Image 1 (tube, rainbow, N blue to C red):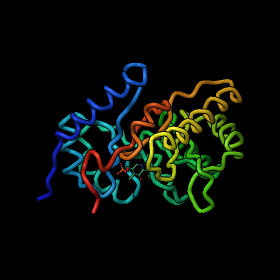
Image 2: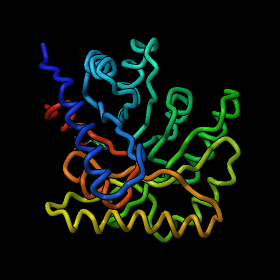
Image 3: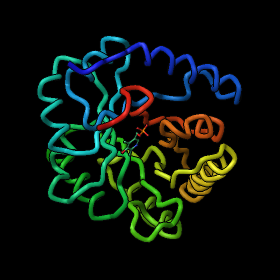
Length: 230
Ligand SMILES: *Cc1c(COP(=O)(O)O)cnc(C)c1O
């Protein structure tokens, strides 16, 4: 039996509340998403019962299995993994948010699947390769505006903001600086699109405080909630 300790949820919620006050963030402007890859459906259910209702999954097949046994729970599902085009239909049909859109082709396919399913527009974030690492996921900074304009014109997608997975940094100031770059990109994008984007998905267990300080609205937390992954 795994040692599931949902007490960590209350500790974390309290910490997010305190940090939100410390950095003068508006009340309830930071959402907590449990990054539940490799965690069982039982673990998700235990945390759901303890008061967590949003979960992020990276691997589609694993996620579908867990979702199938949790249909009776009112969970908001976030897709936070890389997207293969042959899996876009299942992603469109089984998730409320997709954080990792990084190219037109994927946007097109998600848009088409939502249209065919007759569902309301899908909430999407564009993943930005914020550290401009050659082999990493995310649109490059210089291609961001073009992609965002394209997605903004997809009637079945609702562009909500940006997401990034920066390189691990071990001190607060460096973490803050890279998260601020994403916030600045979002502001620039809002000007370019003449629209406001309400979401920034940034911050994991090791850089949560910097993400809150910079203005993240969605923390994706695995380790600090569920313990170390094996
Ligand atoms: C695993 C994962 C997380 C959570 O990471 P922790 O360091 O365990 O909090 C967040 N975002 C993505 C995209 C992940 O894959």
